[in-house]
Length: 179
Image 1 (spheres, helix red, strand yellow):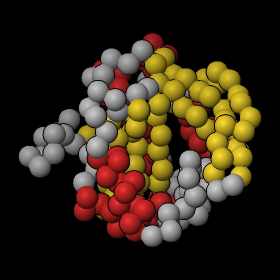
Image 2 (image 1 turned 180 degrees about the vertical axis):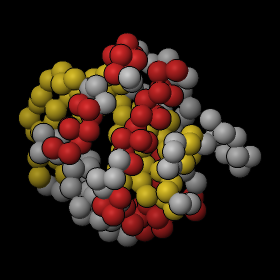
Image 3 (image 1 turned 90 degrees about the vertical axis):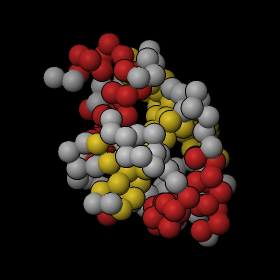
């Protein structure tokens, strides 16, 4: 954890910086949130204009500290996505497709999971994933998440009903999987 003066902290991995979002991130985040590929399994349709992203970003910035903790993901000083626990203990992440399949999501998730268990002392972290999102299911499974259940018609996104796979990662399981 590094204090950069402008923000409470920045989490650094070998290739990324994870920091709290700020209003100036709106254009980079709009590039992610307006991309149909990135938003295919998100809880809303792609953003149609930057005002929609600005509203989403304001909500993200306004998360009360005791309720959640979200970060933008920076690569080479450019915001390429977001990762975090919008509401404890549920984790979520999204990356611009230009950065898929390069290990960035795993790297960012590992840093946030470590922080959630060490700093926030969460006993477990949960995730809700569309069963068709094979890449995210594989990523979370590789990090030690275990399927805990399934449900049908849990999200209506753009008039289409989606199902859910529920996953959980316990603090003890994370420690065992870190080797």
